[in-house]
Image 1 (tube, rainbow, N blue to C red):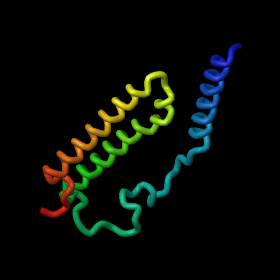
Image 2 (tube, one colour; image 1 turned 180 degrees about the vertical axis):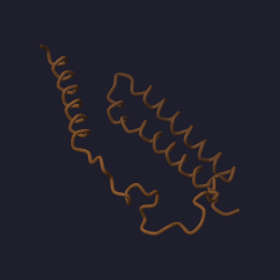
Image 3 (cartoon, rainbow, N blue to C red; image 1 turned 180 degrees about the horizontal axis):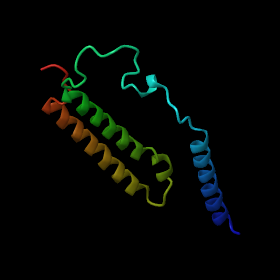
Image 4 (cartoon, rainbow, N blue to C red; image 1 turned 135 degrees about the vertical axis):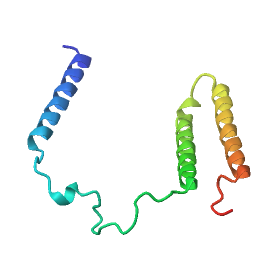
Length: 116
């Protein structure tokens, strides 16, 4: 049996064993407090469906976007050691330029302002 087949078989068996163990050991009679929708210790005083500002969502999406784009730049120290580092430099400059243009656009459109 080669290594790939062994690792595939071992991971499948481990996954099946852990899933079976979870179903077997799980509590089937949950507490009524755990079933309640509010676990903060007090009953709600008003409606839970209050309008939420879209600015929080836009800032969160911008954070995720820039965070994921920075993750594209993390392998650069290894990519510079390739046979043509000039291609790496061109792609890096392109990514940074796109990020900068996106940030400038959001800034000029007022997407980063909290108050009007």
